[in-house]
Image 1 (cartoon, rainbow, N blue to C red):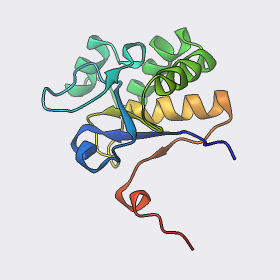
Image 2: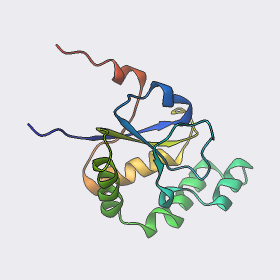
Image 3: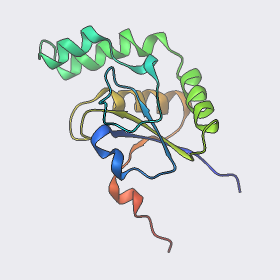
Image 4: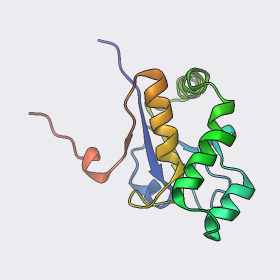
Length: 139
């Protein structure tokens, strides 16, 4: 049976808990220097202006996400992005991939917007990687 790679989302502070076989890809405009990542997917980064407006609370989370969809995702092909992510994964020695940024899962974040966009366009499922998923047991 062929092995099926999974794409997840997560955040930088959770990196130490991610499995060793997970490719860690930043989709954040800025990545902490201490974050041990494997690479970047810069075309999914929010713009500096959008980030500045969100951090200063000049725009709401809803407006942030609407503008992110319009300014970033509408210019990309969800199929091409997905294929590129799989290509990057296949060139590595890893089995899974995590798209990373700063926000905790409970906070509004563009990575969930990216995941939903990829899911809808490619008929796949992308979940937030949690510690519980790491502890899967065989029944």
